[in-house]
Structure formats: structure tokens, C-alpha cells
Image 1 (tube, rainbow, N blue to C red):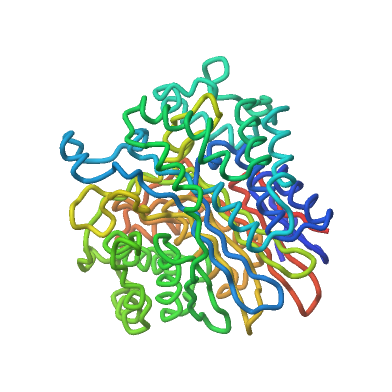
Image 2: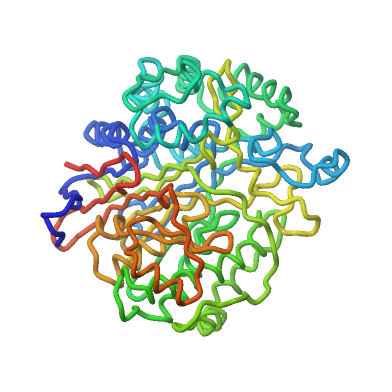
Length: 532
């Protein structure tokens, strides 16, 4: 139990249904849908559409989506890949002929055809009970009438002013600057686009005036996108077989590549072999072990992870218990590895922005849902006529010929957004996720071990200060005690305090024995978990 003398909050409890999102308006929207008879997937789509309006730096209909869905009583988990593809003209030859040696995060070349709207329609057709015509109405209202900018949204917005200004996204700089907390921000053009999608489905986004506006915008910025690329994107979302790995009495479920859920399973496999650290969840040894394991699996991510339709991704090898045991044996409690064994090389693009939410309905259906523009405001390229801010997922590609993740026509990039699901004895126990770009596998494994290995409650497991090995340094949040930072330095880590916290997450635990739901929402965002 937490110390009630200290700042913080406890988990949320409910008996019927629950939603946890990164913005209060989205959580309330999900509850409205649930109370009106919608299921967990209906509520998730309505909530994420609201987030696409009220948390515009993190997500939008110009982004991508992944989902894990556990239908009640079935004992399985359904996965959906809603990530978009590079345009047909995006070949290595094209970039080499123009002397482009690296992709830029604010270039039209970093924009892949968005998959989110295709994903929403595909998911609802397979498992929903309501349609986009109903579920998009709250988002339409927020876009048309406006919403007050929340503190974390304003913080991220202010850090992205220059990108927006450079790409001419002046509609997102009212009075020439990022809005302050409390500013009521309206998006009338986006409201009209959402109305069209509500009326005519995904076709209204991928064909006709909206697609034409987006393509024209990208072409003006030097892109090779065509309306044919967008038309093909209408059916890009697909149901896929999820990955899973046992961890103690639980099974952890993830979406397969091109997403990085595989890396979560590798991390958890290594940590299980190491066992709990002797100094507890915020001890130097615990954080050191976790950082070392992350360095090893992220190395493998950069060498092997790609679109499996166009590259051979050795999933079975990377999840093999023998291989993970070999990696665990490389980790010493006495010293950080000075150099990693070679597994390939790729340059990490700078990280982060995404929204994650989860919903459990009164029938026991559970939804783990993530939607993203990748970096803050994605590419920073706004299609003004339609109000669509465009992602920069293509920045996840490399231009190195022969690399599994080299850009190619109609190829999906290595993707960072990863919903998670936990089951036990054939029943779903918890939808969960931790957003934050490249941090996500690290964040999920920190959260899961906080909860399952170190006995913290669901809110404490999200609250606990975080570290992340990145760019040759160990990035530490300000909440890590000074003596622990010193211990990590003595172990050989180069500690670096970060201004921006690592990620943000949500989770809902299904306690069948007591007949209640227990939810948590990360204080690093503006959100909340609520139920009834």
C-alpha cells in the first residue's frame, strides 16, 4: 500500500467495466460507449479518435495503429497490424540518384501511407458492435468545438514549435506559438474529414478529396506519394498471428514484426533467467541488469527487425530459450559490458510520441490499443485542407542496401508501437502498454517486472522512476535517487539526466477471484483510469 502522506494516487477500482487512456476526455468517451452497450473495441476506437484530436502531438488519423484483442470466453488473443507502407516510388535507387544518404524526420520521405483509419474499420468489422458513424461523433465535436490544451500536451507542443514552423503547419501555432495550457484549440478542417469518414468509412480517407489533399501536400514537400498509394492503403490493416512467451504462470502476448513486441519477449526471457535483484525494484543492481539486457536485445532489434513480408526475421531464433540464456550469461552484476557482441548495426532515430489505451467491458472482452504519429507531430507536415497531420514512420527505415530494414516500395518500416496483453490459464489477466517510441520494450518490461516480480501495485508499477540505455548512455529520470545513479556510474554506466520523462502507460488488471477491475494510468501523461 502506498504512503498516503506522499504525493501520488492509488489504482482505480470498478466492478463492471473500465478504461484507461492518456487523456481524461478519451477515458470518459470510452465509458460513455461502454454504458451505452458498446464493447471494449467500440470504446477503444471512440477513445482513440478523441485522442487523435485532443492529443495531436502524439497521435492522429495520419498515423498508424496496432491492437491486441482478447474476446471473452475464447482463450485466445487476436492481433492486428495497422501499420502503413512506403509509397511505390520509395526505392533505394530513387534516394541514391538524388544523393540522399539518410532520411530526415521532417521530410516527406519519412511519411508512410497512414494505416490507422484502415485499422479502425477492419477491427470494427471483425469484433465491434458499432460503426464509425456512431463512434467518431465525440471526436468530431472536440475537433469542431475545441478542447482545452492539457499541461503535458502543451509541454510537448512547445518543444516542437520549430518543426511545425519549418514545415508550414501554422494552423498548429495559434498567434505564432504553441498554445499554453488551457488554450481552447479547434480543428475545423479535421472535423470535416472525420465527418466524411463517419459517413463513408475508410474510403473517405484513402480516396477522393482527402487523399488528394494529402498527396498534393506531400508532393509539394518533395514526396513521391500518389493517390494510387493511398487507395491501396485502404485495406493495409490485417489480422495477424500474435507472438507469445511464457513467463512463470503467465503468458505475455505481443504483435509480431514489423513491430518490436518481439523485443519485450526477449527482455522478459533474459530477466526471468536472472531472477529478482537482491536490492529491490529501484536498486542499482536491478536497474543495471535491466539496462544490460536492453542493450543486448535492442542490438538484435537493429540488426534483424523488419517487415517480414520483405525480409527474413529470425523470430524463432531470437526467442529460443538457449539463446536468451546465453545473453543472460553475458550480464555481470559487477560491471557493465564495455562492448556488445556484434549482431549487426543500424542507427537509431530519435524517439518518441504515441498514445496507448486499454479497455475491459462488462462481458470480459479486453482491448489493448495503440495509435501513433511516431515523433511529436510526426513529420510536422500538415495537409491543411483536410486537417491531417502526417506521421514520420518512414524514419524507421534505413538506406543501407542489404539491410533487412532498408526502405523499399510498399514496405513497412520497423515499428516501435506495441500493445501488450497478459493471460493466465487461458484467460486474459491484463491489457497493458507503455508508450514512448523506442523506449516501449524497456518500458513494458520494467512495468511487468515491477508488478509481477517485485510486488508493486498496478499504479506504483507505472509510477516508479525509469532508466533507458540509449545512444551509449543510460538515460535516467530525475526520480532515480542520487545514490543509485552513483552506483550505476560505478558499474560502468554513463548516466544522463533527461528533461523529458520516459514514456507513459496504462493497464487494467482483471481480478476474477474478487470480481473487480483494477486500473492504472501513468502520471507522466495527463490521463486517468476510470470504471463503473
